[in-house]
Image 1 (cartoon, protein in one colour):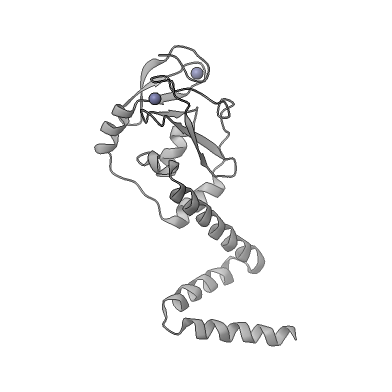
Image 2 (spheres, helix red, strand yellow):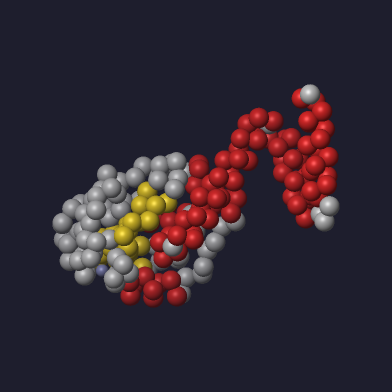
Length: 189
Ligand SMILES: [Zn+2]
Ligand SMILES: [Zn+2]
């Protein structure tokens, strides 16, 4: 079996705790055969991060995508074109997956990133449009909060977020929010 990116022969290797993969010693990418992945996932605890922590990681971890990341590739097992799923970070990267045999290709460093983000056990979700939409929403919410922190400082921002979540849960929270809005309308007149 040859590397889908640089065509060198792949060698037997392992990722994390005993996930058997085919590794390329030239470009440092790894092919994760579907059977191996499924066997590994079934005995791994499912990790999932809180939306806040996840968005923070997406925004703040710096990855340098492998130069091979942008290269289109064929499945080393069944030769279909690998589908690409974007992980939207400061420097986005793409995870690739064969639509036919569901094997996964990770360029150098990508598997470690997936582990950090709590996504290594749920790679297939990256390829669903619903998940991609949720990831965009979370990023947007995070950026919105950051903008508030930048404008009013972390202390007041923390108070504001706390008040906002109290009001969200209160049956007449919208009434209280409208009161605040009116206070500011008056100031600007
Ligand atoms: Zn390679
Ligand atoms: Zn395939």
